[in-house]
Structures are given as structure tokens and as C-alpha cells.
Image (cartoon, rainbow, N blue to C red; front, side):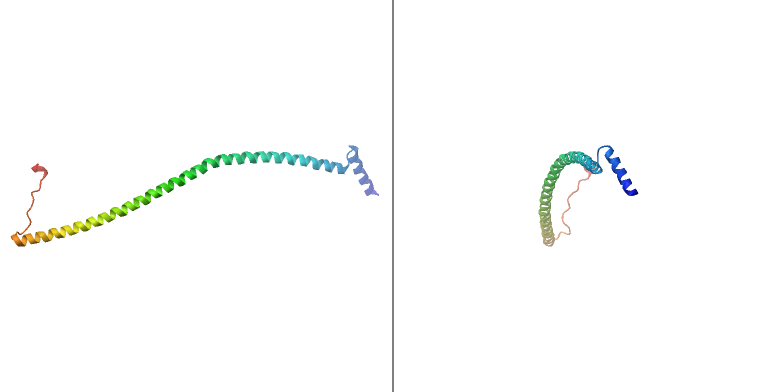
Length: 134
């Protein structure tokens, strides 16, 4: 019986305002739904602003990346071309070095033949210019 009195007292308190406990719960749920909608709208607005900012920053970065890639390709092509020129010039240097060696050999044999035929002990010397003789 005491329990019934307590339950009736709570019901009486709830009905004093003219609102039953079930109606109060429904009212609280509706209030919470309104708060959630406002929070959702605010969060959505913040997200859209952040997404726009990211897009605004991404576009110049994309162009910078694309430009840098093109520059890398151009510089790589230049480096490859320079490598090919270096290889070509190294081959020329080797060929010229071989020719110089052959020419020096021919010169040595010509001097040797000249010495034998004219009995010259050494090749003629050229007079060297010095700064004092000028």
C-alpha cells in the first residue's frame, strides 16, 4: 500500500503541470532531436567550409606537382642528352689519343731512319724563346 501511495504521489507531481511522464519523455526526445538537427547543420556547415578550403589549397598544389613533373622530365631528357654527348666526346678523345700515338710512333721511326741515313746523333733543336730574349 505504501508503494501505491508513492507511485500516486509521483503521478500527481507529474500531472500537476498537466503533463504526464510519457508526454515529458516525448517532449525531451523532441528537444533532443532539435538539438541534434542544429548540431548536424553546424557540423555540416563547418565540414563544407573545410572541404572548400581543402579544394582551394589542392588546386594550386596539383598544378605545382604537374609543373614539377614536367620540369623533371625535361631535365632528365637534358641529362640523357648530355650523357650521350659525353660518350661521343670520350670516343673522339680515345680516337684522337690513338692517332697521336700512331703519329708519334711514325715520327720516332722517321727520326730513326733519318739518323741512320744522315748519321745525325740527335734531331735538330729549335731555339726556345725566353722572356728575356724578347
